[in-house]
Image 1: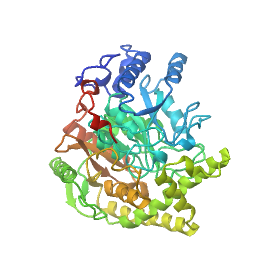
Image 2: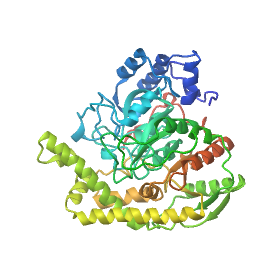
Image 3: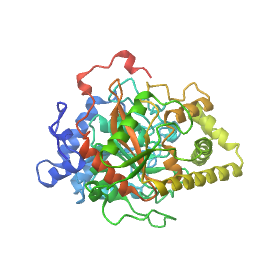
Image 4: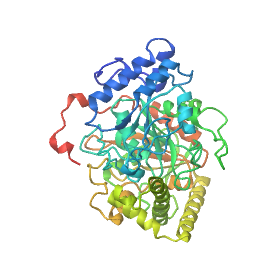
Length: 497
């Protein structure tokens, strides 16, 4: 994909931001640009906009340069710079601090399977992006590394927990970046930053070889991107079971990249504009979802308003138990390794309260929470007997001001309620393991991007890529970008969380 640049180039390869990742790789193959020149272009942008944006917290461009010098593998993304989220992805020789002081000096001894596959696809890994502590928030404001700002409005959050990745892509650092999604953590930042965010079916991308699954199978890694085809091609390069995985979703018959250009046919789309928790929805977000429903109908799909039919309050309670217990296990292992009697002293107060709550739970509470996930999956599965796609808002509001979703000064109950009020539509797809995506189809009255969510049944990732390709062709968003950061000086108020 190639368009005319909408912002003046900051430096380096002049057409860097005019191409998606596949477009940049094509230029490398044609000899029109080198991988080193692309890396330089990425670094120029990072240097120009950090630390104001604060999207990248660990840099290792020296590893990228060594990889280029050694000779990159011939893959779909050969030579393209890439950033990975500072949670869950092991990159040999780099820090994996998970947004926390407790893990500040943890260095990965080897690549995870997913990182190895990203490298085999030709991507040049150059840094880790900011994330909230333990990825437990829909805003990226960790005390250990500071707030990440949204390139569309520096006083607002880019979302979380993949907020650093989304901010970096929206600002033009890289054309796509690694993200992961345990309750909406890919889709929410994509929605707030005007990007395409895809959460694949559970275990389509592996988490091994050390981990088997994250938060009871709810955490799913993939990416945020500026184009649909980049997301599809990346999934083609990384999907498939790892050796010894206890379960996995079967791959489709053909590459996902080919699905992007195919007609999706007439889809049965269920449309649910009302929060499943009965909480308020901002009029701009409701209007964006409604407009998307009308747009899909204009494209020939059958769209019907209907509830999704699951118990959202039960899911909200279950996610709190499962996330808390899983983080508790990681914290206790880290404390044992360091010989710490009180690891909570190195944690944010709201997260410390969360794991202390988890410590008091009986084992039967965790089992009951897992059973709630299974009931949720059954309910959503019944929905997809009658419908191909579920359409809804991604979030209940556009990107809010920094500080409002953060945990500082809040009780655990208040923080957790804010978390769910902000994005009540996303977690059901994590609980069920079904694929879902945020598509940048809306804009608020104040000019902020708004994402619309589309989800499908288990293993029907190809259906979503076909629909996403159709939406992108009919209403392109690639050249819809925030104003250049270099052209505006942030006001003092914008720099306050």
